[in-house]
Length: 344
Image 1: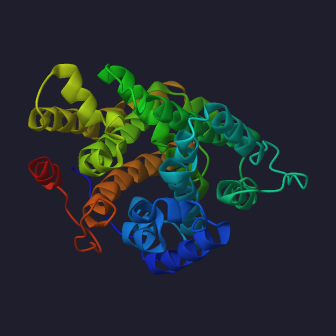
Image 2: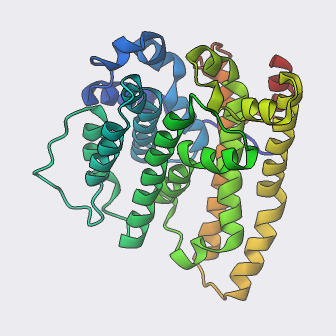
């Protein structure tokens, strides 16, 4: 990990905000926190410290922006951890798909209120509350891209539910799917909310798309390494990349984690060494005027900051059965991958 982690100075205010916000949305009500009290009770919520993840992945965000980013990610964590898995209990795929379709109705592309839509559960309330805070400064194309990212995440979670009992035999297929149900495309698009929109013609450039895919892979595959034991305990290990490699290659866990770490390191190298020069050449070739190139340089740096921050959060959070000291200020992470593979 060649990048340096930093912690947003507004962390404490966001911690208090998101705890209150999640309670307002009903995320600790029946049947969520009580069905899986060891996963989503108030105590486990505080222990996971989701606000720390956003404070370390968005170290320069202003207080209001950090609150917004944190609320969105907590909503998606809630969907992934508890909400859609509830449908799996009854094997009701049709109800799960209908719920996903209804959730997207709370994100109209025009950004206008829909008074006839009355939220009936925590995620609907969260989307109804977050979209009016998010949409106003966004152009129609930007809103469409954001909604598509949420759509990809929700359908990715449906895919995950469908495959959790069967597993995936192809590591390449898994990497593609992991980008969807990991929710990182939404993270990348939401970053623009605080930094400024990336125009569509620039966003579609191959080097930037490579950077965004590398960003999603880094955070997702690193999470797979760290969360392996937790997912064994939950019975969801079939959707873990380390396990996919172990089964596909017929190797033991140590070799699978070592290979995953090599893939992870290669994706970090892509973000660090390849994308920047390639993107600069693409911007020059297309004669993209300022301030877009300057804004884009800041955006790429934000992606790098976020990967370092995510690494640091995984070492500090209690979400994976351990709690280490929370880093404050610049923190080097050069040995974290080695420590994680030794832990496995």
